[in-house]
Image 1 (cartoon, rainbow, N blue to C red):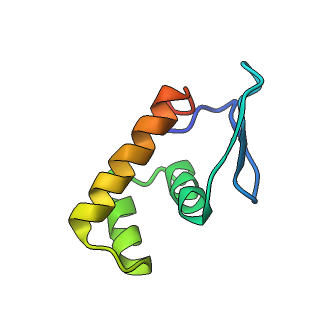
Image 2 (cartoon, rainbow, N blue to C red):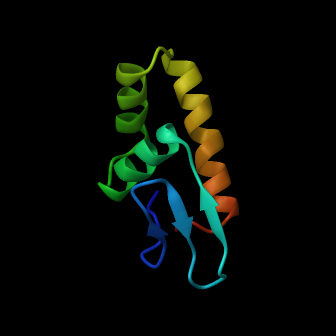
Image 3 (cartoon, rainbow, N blue to C red):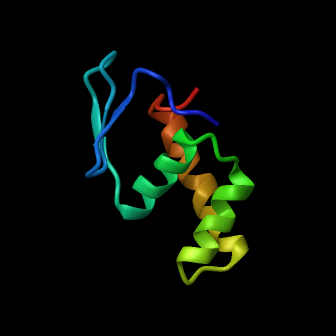
Length: 79
C-alpha cells in the first residue's frame, strides 16, 4: 500500500489532503507507520517493526495495522 503522492504529512503527524482540504492527525505509532509506508515497506516489514519497538505480539500488531490501513484507505490517503 502506498501513500498518495499529493498527501502532505508533517513531522508532527499532521496529514493534509490538498484535493479535499481535509486534514487529520495521527499519534506516534501512526507517524511511524506512515514513514514506513513512504519508504515502501510492506505489511510484513511494518508488523515486524511494530513488534520490535512496542510491547505487542504479532497478531495484535497485524490487527492494529490492518485497522489503521483501513482508516487510511477510507479517507483516501492511500492508493
